[in-house]
Amino acid sequence: MNFRIVSLFLGRISLAEMVVLLVPLCFAVGSGDGSAYIFIAAMVACFGAGAVFLSGGEARQQKLTIREGIAITGLGWLLATLLGMIPYVAGGYLGAVDGLFESISGFTGTGATVIRDLESFPQSLLLWRSMTHWLGGLGIVVIFIALLPESGQSSSYIYNAEAAGPTKERVLPRLHDMTKVLFEIYSAFTVLAFFIFLLCGMDVVSSLNHALSTVSAGGFSTYNESAAHFDSVAVEGWMTFFMVLAGGNFGLYYRVYHKGVSVLRNNTEFKAYIAVLVAATAAILANLMYESGLSPWEALRYAGFQAVSIATTGFVSADYDRWPAFSKLILLGLMVCGGCAGSTAAGLKISRAVILVRSVYANVTHFLHPKQVLDVRMNGYTLPESTIFRVGQYFFMYLLCIALWALLLTYDGIDVFDALGISISTMGCIGPAFGITGATCTYAELSHFSKTVLCFSMLVGRLEIFTVLVMLRPSLWKSRNMW
Image 1 (tube, rainbow, N blue to C red):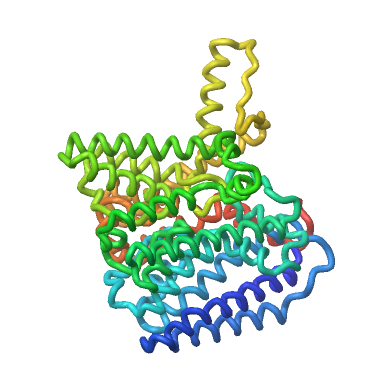
Image 2: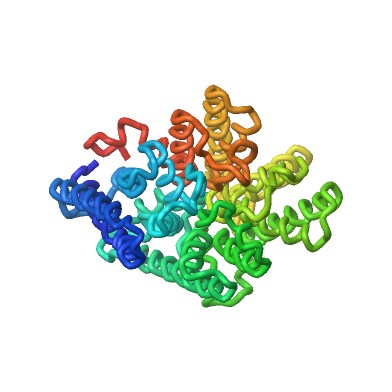
């Protein structure tokens, strides 16, 4: 482990965050909401951290190792969230624990909030809140590599430590070129969403905030009622469209642009992703019509939006806590599945779910036909056994983490079902859960102990489990090469 190289990257990330803070600072000055000083304080802290790290850093003379890549990714996320909490705390809007929770929730794209009354907060602070979604949605380090060419060389271990999914396929051979393309697609979707939301009747500030939150699969809104505030079919329809895009593989969109829509028909994960959303919507629609007496149109409107939102962002258009148990159980399953690998959504990932189902089918068939050779295939290719094994391991660890967070929450006095829902929601980086943290509630009432536990849950869910587990190994931080 070369700590001086790690320090150099951390210093650059600190200075990059300082530059980004100029946006809400300029907004605060322009709007005159009196909150400019909190961003100045945050920028001073970023500059100080950057100066300290850069003074102890050095330019690398050789390729990064896997240990340095993991350290830069993990510590980079911790550093960004710690610096990101300063605007909340400096202005006295939130305490230290609540500020850290809000910052981690923002950067990880969870969308869980401890703010009771959003509409009383300065618009500039709410803009920063949405910007944390956007910065963390594609990945702090991915954006860093895309914007700084010299950081893209030999940085594949950084990308792999942050990338989510069972495989780390690339759409372009050079890492910098690939991250740049992903960033351009990400930015284009955001700009498009912004203008469409404007046409739907949102004001400029709301359009910008919701475009940042939607495309990043975050879920932060500027209103206490979330998407329900607008009570607009057009707004909900377009938000649903962009949430579906956010939950898809951004690398796949690049291939569609160059090779046509036939790429989508040949992609196993994307077809499964759409099929899951359609099936969940249809099941909830039927349940709402039968149990709640909603008209077909009302049931479709709420079921479609909420199914897509729970799988990706966590926006709320209806109080689903009052829905029948069957519908709530489907939403819970969508929280677990999440979006596609290579998307801004978190969760287990649809690709892993497909691999798990197909591997179970192959094993059951093998019992009936021991001599038959059955392969697990994705996108027309046979998956190696090592990939299937890693998916099984990851699924086990994912369930184990959910059980652990739920156990700790019940120790703090939270009801079992509520604890399980909160655990699944934060591990899947969704945000709203059920009961005390349901559609119309916040996380403000939880104790500092529970909030601290959930901070770990959100980070583990976003960075993926094995990256975090490797960081807990003492051998990672030794100077000698253990890899």
